[in-house]
Length: 206
Image 1 (cartoon, rainbow, N blue to C red):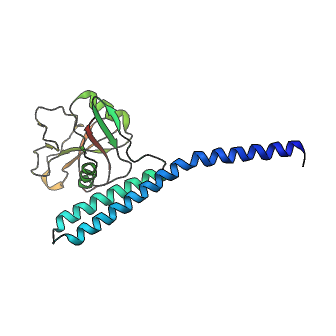
Image 2 (cartoon, rainbow, N blue to C red):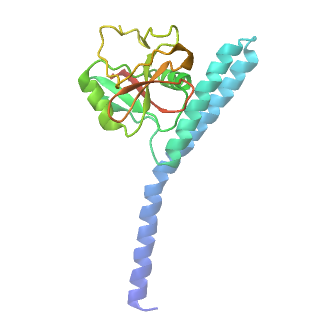
Image 3 (cartoon, rainbow, N blue to C red):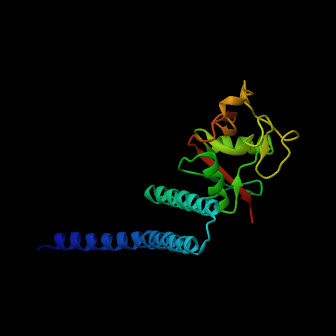
């Protein structure tokens, strides 16, 4: 074996060592996340066993856990961190990477101590528009009473900004379009709550 071969082998060994060091940290992170999911399942299972017939609460917890696990699995498979929040004007925003019904999205945001986004200004609407390429759920609905629009955090609808698309919101009561989407142009659409779309979560910046 000549000197050139020895040099090539040594160089290859250094590259493999550097590659191993670079891959070690993500493996540790993914392992810890997997253990966190397993622990959550165990805790939830224990809570269900101790529960005395509160099926609604159990169903909500299962829905939240399912949404979190789906989101985490999707993020890991695409090399994305689970807790990737974006900052704007003293608030943090999370743009989900999986699609859910409006209620599931509401629960998913709640599980991260946040809520579906409430849009309070043209600047905030522009920020959202710059960060999406398709329709996302926001925290506006008229599920309680047709035509009575409510923000999930209690913000007054009448005095707040509005960005409805032409012909929106719909006023035909039997269609069941009670939840609101924002599209990539920043316009709002009155839509069916039980259609899967991405969602935007929001919480105050700490």
